[in-house]
Length: 150
Image (cartoon, rainbow, N blue to C red):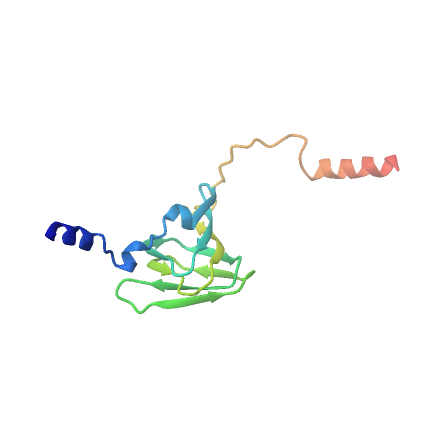
């Protein structure tokens, strides 16, 4: 009888422990990742929370109206509210984020990757080779040839 009671008590789990926590793969979807930027789609379900993480400087474009709560360690949480179609700049920070509303929040996030500054007078490195046919003279010749055919 006592073992049955202990078994029954072990099956009782608090409601907060029963709710699954969002997984990064469910929250973010990578759209582009190169040397200069990382573009992600954010889908933050109502009540979702993302553990503290370091975020670089980011451009955010709202796909839906929303309010995201940022909680930085040792600081008072603050809200960022935006409308669908609005662009925001979010400076780099270490913060937990959450959606404390009853609606899903969707946004595009463009994380700016740091690049070393270019020294004055330094030539840009390019892998592409310039075509001998390209340039303003070629464009002028093409326009003149098109005009003469009319």
